[in-house]
Amino acid sequence: MAEIPTYTLNDSTSIPAIGLGTYGLRGAAGTEAVALAIGSGYRLLDTALNYENEREVGDGIRTSGIDRSEIVVTSKIPGRHHGYDETLGSFAESSTNLGLDVIDLYLIHWPLPGVDKYVDTWKAMIALRDEGKVRSIGVSNFTEEHLERIIGETGVAPAVNQVELHPYFPQATLRAFHERHAIRTESWSPLAKRTELTREPLLVAIADSHSVTPTQAVLRWHLQLGSIPIPKSADAARQRENLDVFGFELSDDEVATISSLERGRLWGGDPVTHEEF
Ligand SMILES: NC(=O)C1=CN([C@@H]2O[C@H](COP(=O)(O)OP(=O)(O)OC[C@H]3O[C@@H](n4cnc5c(N)ncnc54)[C@H](OP(=O)(O)O)[C@@H]3O)[C@@H](O)[C@H]2O)C=CC1
Ligand SMILES: O=C(O)C(=O)[C@@H](O)[C@H](O)C(=O)CO
Image 1 (tube, helix red, strand yellow):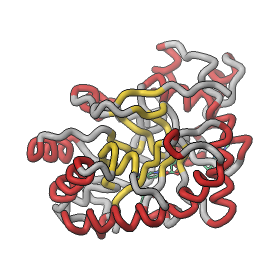
Image 2 (image 1 turned 30 degrees about the horizontal axis):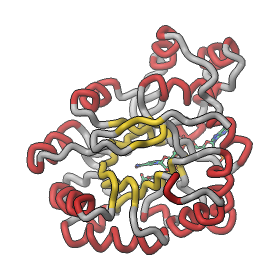
Image 3 (image 1 turned 30 degrees about the vertical axis):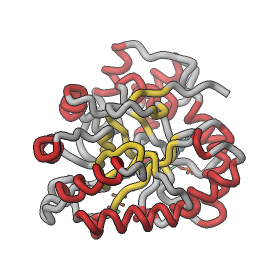
Image 4 (image 1 turned 135 degrees about the horizontal axis):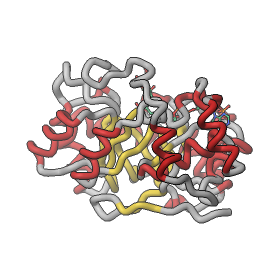
């Protein structure tokens, strides 16, 4: 099993370069899928209170036979829990669901600027980190404006911003902002939810030239951008395929060619207007 490289975040903690998305992994099959992924080498898991599968993720860790300390568990606070006290309560709920005292990476799921409580939410996240209940704090779906505001009002930059990112939406400007502020980018829906992306002829040609699958070429593209992809798969063979991306390298031209598939945000989840409660 290949060793997964890690990044050091801006708070000095370590995070694997690729992880498992778990949206939709529920029930006994969900627990089994999480345990199988850990058995195949995944050490970064992504869930959220709103996925209603934190219990399955915790159970998957416990049945995997791998020490909990080796796994970076991510969860996220939903919009209905924005606000200082609500955030502390939401953490307690997620911690109970997961059966874990400490959450390794805790994110604000969406900024909900219309509600305008994300700064207070961020302050509570800082308190949770300072109390040792959370190892790293970050955000998801934040724009430059939202990031500038929380950094300006608290002096604390998120360790991670998890955003929609795939070859149809490479987010070059936001990634450059992240780099300037030592924020690690994470890619959600890194395979563009397996739409027509992996049938794109130019991607298929690049994959063929490396004797890998189009999915593997896409995941390698994320790695070479320095963004952490969290592909979801319920299937053990596909989970392994998605992790087997460290034995080849794309040229700069190939990275640029894949990025040229850009067409914009795909599912209408504009952080400025999207309300997720
Ligand atoms: N912060 C946020 O707002 C958001 C976060 N997320 C996170 O990102 C994760 C990943 O995004 P998601 O939307 O699930 O989409 P992905 O881009 O990860 O695509 C998942 C789809 O691809 C299929 N798939 C995975 N690997 C392969 C493969 N090797 N070959 C063929 N098909 C494959 C899966 O099917 P199968 O399971 O059958 O293999 C599934 O249908 C989520 O699970 C969630 O954790 C997602 C959306 C928003
Ligand atoms: O994080 C996810 O997987 C999502 O789908 C989010 O967009 C969020 O849970 C949501 O808005 C659901 O409608």
